[in-house]
Length: 489
Figure 1 (cartoon, rainbow, N blue to C red):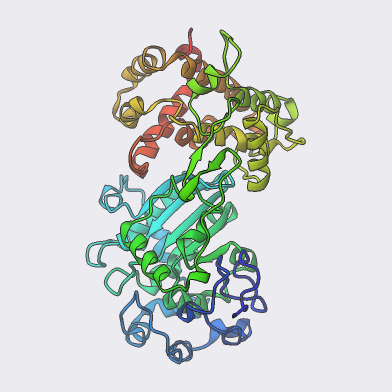
Figure 2: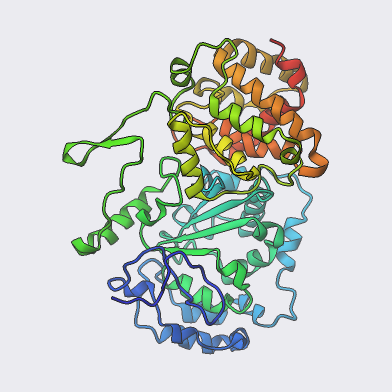
């Protein structure tokens, strides 16, 4: 078996490292997704080669890219993007001008294609942004300058905290593939602000197009950024990192993955995932969840209340434990208290402790407690703000300033169940303490709204759209800044 790629979790790094890693352990049956290390053995001066040399190297490969059917020789020869081979030219000028455009835009003309979506949090507590190539319209329909601005406006909502990107490459064709010049402009436009907190970039179903892009860009991509890139040959490889119940995978991508999986030998196909510690296996390989009486994660507030000692001031134990730990002065003053991710293994261990009725041992780790609190909220059987209120919250931006206070009071005081109200009030009062120290922890009401908004409310069916993220965050910000007049009971 071909073992060129070494560790499955390594990203693209320096020239001497393996340049095209994958999360998969199987590499001897899909040669069109691989190439030899020797092809990238050139020095960092590769970027100074002529585009004809790069093109010749690419065309030497007998592998056909089954997704993009086009004449690369013709396109690359004609594409003005290759001016980026000369670093003296201001190749990012067009992107910068577009970003600095002062015109107010709602980007509805771009957002309607749902190319970019938010998919909750990953296994490490980081926001997940999904980009699907199969949803890109033809180049004749899409204004790529506006698309770049839309991408930046979207990421601006999340780049202040750790986040992950998932790119579904299948579906990119000669008709909808952005020009090379746009790709370079995008890379230059996404400066350190966007790259710093990007912790993982998953490239799903890579093809030779990804290969030629890597050849062109590798000399200017830092080794640190390169290590964040993960190549994913099959969807099942994402399971250890992402929550599939939150990840909206386009149907064409699912069908493409099924075709790839069908080509595997039985010995190469993945085994069914092992049940978690709160599951029991039954006959015929089925699995059912055996909820423990002390279960905290993945259940409803009502379940936790019903299995807790009677208490008029009921708060879920894990919420109280996290908040009490995070309310310590040193914790409250930690910069980026809710922006950092945590080890998925340690989070899983803490969840297991809580589900068995034990008090979690944070071992002094502020970010671990912060991630556990967010994870609890996100994994509730029903969001804290309930499914019933989702549509009303999604229209929050349309309300006039005078209407907002009255409408929110009715939602919180009259429509929210008692246990939900009490828990929400408890969390908001804690977050008020966090905001009081925003000069040290950098967590303003707006920043906290971005972190907690999508964890307080989400739709019962379908994926949360980017158009709903804005109203949800504004609603959460309003709760944070007006809690004294809202939580009056």
